[in-house]
Length: 98
Image (cartoon, rainbow, N blue to C red; front, side, top):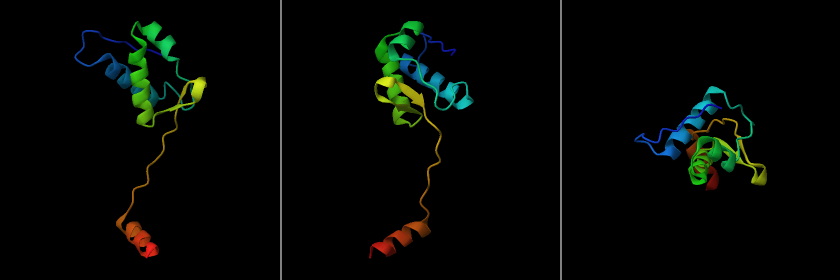
C-alpha cells in the first residue's frame, strides 16, 4: 500500500489519507473484502497520530466504502448500486397505503 502524507499540504492529513485510501479502493489496489491495517499499525507506518487514521476510517465507513467488523478490523465493502425512486413507484406506494 503506497500512501504518502504531506505535512505542508493545505489539505488536512485526515483528508489526504481518506482521498488516497479511496483511490486505492476504487482502483482495485485494495480489493473488496480485504482487511485494512489497524489504526495503530497504519499510524505508525505513516508517522501520524492515530486519530488521523481513525478519522479517515470513520469517514470511509460513513461513505459506505469500508465496513467495520468489531475487533477484527475494517474491510473494504462491495460497491452497491442505490435504487432511485421513480415518480411511478412513488405513486404506486402512495396508492397502496390508502
